[in-house]
Image 1 (cartoon, rainbow, N blue to C red):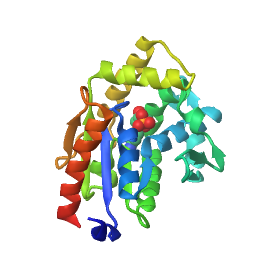
Image 2: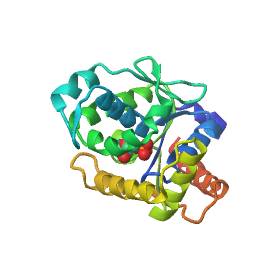
Image 3: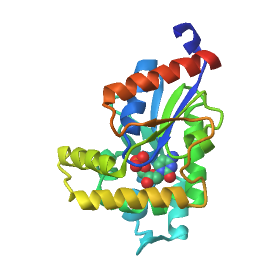
Length: 232
Ligand code: DC
C-alpha cells in the first residue's frame, strides 16, 4: 500500500452531528499520513465571526453584514494540534461552545458561506491527500473521493458522547439540552436547500451505536484499504 500512497487521494467521512466523525477521521489521517480537515470547524468559525460582528439577528443571519467578512476570511489548521486559526487567532475553544453550536446550522445553510468553504476545502486537497469530515464531503466537496464513509449512531448515544466531551472540557451542559441541540441540527442539516446532509450513493455506512472506537477504526480501515487498493 505504501508505494501507492504517493498518489493523492481523498477520504470523505460524513454523517450526523456528534457521531465521532472527527475522532475517526483524525485517526485515519494519522495512520495514512494524510492531512486531516475538520470542515465542521470551518462552519463553526463562520458562525463565530457572525456572532462577534452582530450579524445574527434573533435566529436569522444578516447577509449584508456577513458577506464581506466571509469573502475576506482566512482559515488555517495548526498542524501540531489541528486547532482552527481564524484570521490569525486560535479560536478552537470558542468554536466548540454553546453559542456557536446553536447558530452554526443557520449560518451553514447560506450559499455564499458554503461556496467559500467548499472552495477552501477543495484547495486544501490540491497539494495533499486529505481525510475530511463533514456533511457534504462525499456528495459535494469531493464527489470523486476514493473512499466515502457515512457515520451514524442513535441520537441518545450521540448526546451522551457529546455531554461527556463537554464535561471533560469544563463546558458542561444539561443532557436534555445537548440532545435537543443534536436533534435540531440533524433536522436543519438534512432539510436545508443547499447541499443537505445525505449519504452519497457510493458511501459505506458505519453505525457505531454499539461499537467501541477501536472496533470502529478497525472496521473503517478494512474498508479504506480495500477502496484505496482498488483506486490507486
Ligand atoms: O461537524 P460539526 O458538528 O462540527 O459541524 C458543525 C455544523 O456545521 C453542523 O451543524 C452542520 C455544519 N456543517 C455543514 O453544513 N457542512 C459540513 N461539511 C460540515 C458541517
